[in-house]
Image (cartoon, rainbow, N blue to C red; front, side, top):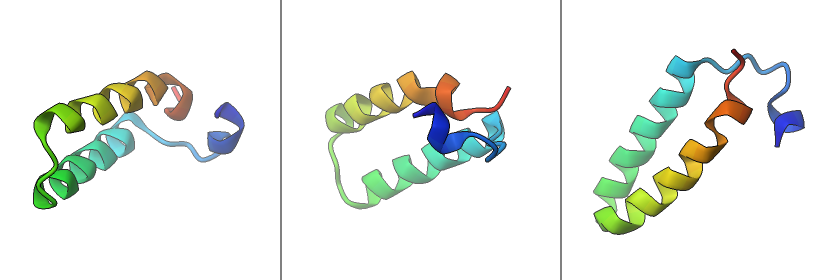
Length: 53
């Protein structure tokens, strides 16, 4: 996973914005909060691999 995001310089702000857009899209599609939380939990686990600190 790390190799994919190397040199993309993704910031915490960028990551958070993607999460916000994802939440909005899931709500627009009527995806249950339980399912949303499962996906967001998995995404949160990738945070440190994606964000260039």
